[in-house]
Length: 507
Image (cartoon, rainbow, N blue to C red; front, side):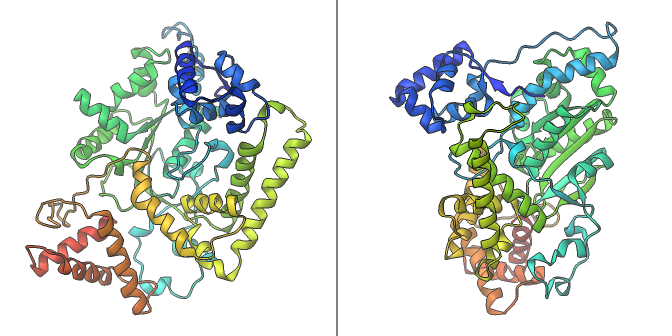
């Protein structure tokens, strides 16, 4: 398992002290910012002594530092040469060498929300459910969606019985996980990586952000996955021969995150190399994630599944975990409690009780009739986290749900990508894959105001017609009408319809 404590390197200490001096703080003030009653952990941090990993990360966060630049790299023992020990022995040693890196890479929840402090993923993760057949592949009509309430659990009635994410990975060695923005795709892969460092298995996980991989591959002019994996694992004591042996024997669980985040210029090459890797090293397991609405690629041998919305039980579990973690991070003094202690002290119990009380209040108010719009919103994990964050401060939901909707739009349309440094160079294509001109320039994107205006237009038209659910052709007509109002040079009806088809498939 990954280490529970971290310490700063000598170079990191120097960087931290410079940042500390720029802030003009005292150690007591920094301790208070982190939520500590004493400065003991802060003193240890600057002295290069080990402290709890979440405190280490939070101190760096408060100093505007990247904690990975400050931490002392884990000590790595060279692996024995192939043949010097049994495969099982050095495989276990390889797992031990890599698990600390996985913990550092995947241990913190990634979110576009304005959090005052990071949350440990394992503290807040709620197991997802997987639909074996993506809903966009099913033949559904509007009548199938009418006359139901949000918590009647529509998805299980329309789709086959769901399974857990771990069950889906165990059942399919090549898996493509689709999901809406904020449905938990990245979090699921991070959780998988952490799980596979902790359970007894013959596979070693490697988590790869495809956006970062593509950027690195472009610089190297080499989009093959094998050298990229060799570069990552080689830093932790594995030789080229050992890495090749691991891949040949199927000892890798390759987690490829965010196919939709790859730029259009790189997408074809990335797709090709994923397919080549999957066929060359067929014995390994691969899990690939992408948005549902992203440009569709067909990977031979992969099973496509979809992340289901949270049901009431998952919402209850997630809310309890979120408030327990938030209370322990914002108000606890972790120095007073040993992480291995079997008997939590009264302060820890009080914090747990406060978190539970806030969670129960959240769940009770969520059932109020006036909060039905919020109940529908929080079936998506990112919006549930948003609602929890708002409730944490106010102890009540906004009296005007529209404000929560506005924050949700901001997350989806702006911060979701910008928080992770993602730039999506959308180029809307017709059904045959040809780039379309939205204005006078081929492949130009709609501006943010255009997107909001278009979504508002769709909502207004359907509301006026009394329709909560509607056919795609109806949306296409609204989009075509919207384009007709724009100052376009080309007013050809067929072109407008093709543009509408492209936009509806991309948003």
